[in-house]
Image (cartoon, rainbow, N blue to C red):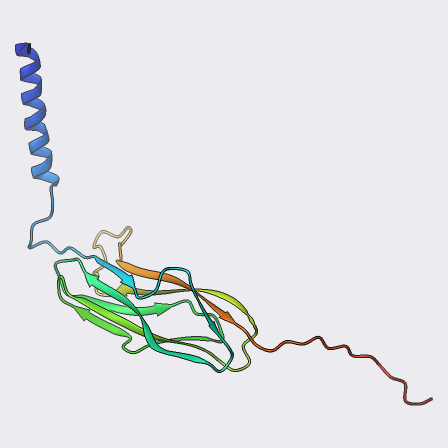
Length: 167
């Protein structure tokens, strides 16, 4: 059984919640909303085994979707170390709201690159997000995937000894 007092408190709470939702609720369609999501054609952490001088064709891809309500200009980026080359077929994508696009990439290893495993992150990041007028932090949507390039090659042990040829 409800008392009149608890009924009034419930009514006040519902009214207050409605005002908060109205004042701070979701942005209207006219307000800019920026966001991207994505997936890749390979699981995160996939290891690609290559030898120096070898390149995989651009069959690997990152799919990006514009989840915002404005056109998204997406730029390709990677942290590939020296000797590893990640080459996108297209370095930029322009996506309308809801549209998807792919960054197809070739993965290569330059001649002379030392053996070993390298962790690499490939990402697409939105470049047309305006800076905040009042300063502070600026959220820039990005999506990335991590992979490993394992460089293999011939190895050998070498022993060098000085020889006295004067005897």
